[in-house]
Amino acid sequence: MENPPATAGRNGSTDGSTRPPERTLLDMYRNIYATRQFELTCIELYRQGLIRGYLHPYIGQEAVAAGVCAALNPADYIVSTHRGHGHCISKGADLGQMMAEIVGRATGTCRGRGGSMHISDKRVNNLGANGIVGGGIPIATGAGMGIKVRGTDQVVVVFFSDGASNNGVFAESLNMAAIYRLPVIYLLENNHYAVSTPIECATGCCDLAGRGPAYGVPGTCVDGNDALAVYRETADAVARARRGLGPALIEAKTYRHGGHHVNDPGLYMDPGVLADWKARDPLLLTRRAIGDDSQAAAIEVQVDAELKTAVAFATKSPEPDVAEFLASIEDG
Ligand SMILES: Cc1ncc(C[n+]2csc(CCOP(=O)(O)OP(=O)(O)O)c2C)c(N)n1
View (cartoon, rainbow, N blue to C red):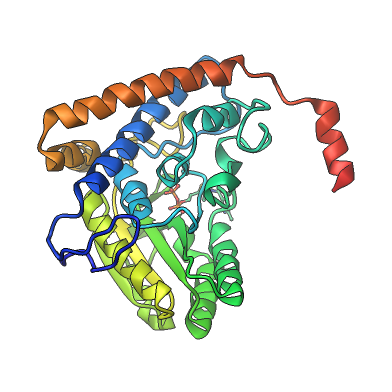
């Protein structure tokens, strides 16, 4: 595995060592653990009828969001998906406002109007999740064009999955990003399924990173359960994009620990394959990489307390006001 690039970003990895700064590893573990606990809590709240609509757990994939966002600055953008809780948390969401959004309360990041699948968070430059598979890909390409026009050194990362990479907008967006050298990182989370369809049944060529060069976009593949590897690969792509060298496609191979959504038992998943992936649970791998149980345990205590406060805040918050909502539509 390559060393982290010698860039002096938020993570300040300039020593060329194979380990990123300790703070980065701990931050990634915090985000992985927070996402895991947040979603386990959401599943309980869903069963209690407190969350309406769909809920798509990210459990098993958390190292992708954590590794990617560790390589970003607060001013950088992300664009998310229907499976986006990990993206939100790793980009810096306040757990209380995020939980309030998911239970549909007025104090949520979108005043309770977006919910799990359409959450966004302007405060941390999260341009939002999307119920349209692949819908975020052209949005990010447009955001990349905006950055280029404004002439800042920001980048945008768009998360999407293997199913979305078969949509036409993938081809159109990569082509456009290549010709304009847009600072967009296309982060393909290959979790090997689109609902119940395994990738082999939906995709003629399963080398998804290999699709990038066909459009003039460098493509790399990384172990998506290894947060450090994801961080390094992303930091490399971010450094290139900030230098004006254009877009990148990163395929992070990972796996869901369960079905497509909260009510899908995932019976079509091979139990042996699932067990192999669970043995490489990103939570365990990252905890092991820290190598100091007391540091990991301290993070867990802090997150558990934060989450408890977040749930209390969210569930005690008022429902959105219908009259205010209708007035806001009329105001445009
Ligand atoms: C344009 C569009 N087509 C179909 C759907 C229905 N749908 C919802 S999720 C999903 C699977 C998406 O698979 P993938 O992109 O691999 O993401 P994952 O769920 O694995 O994270 C489909 C087909 C949709 N929401 N939008």
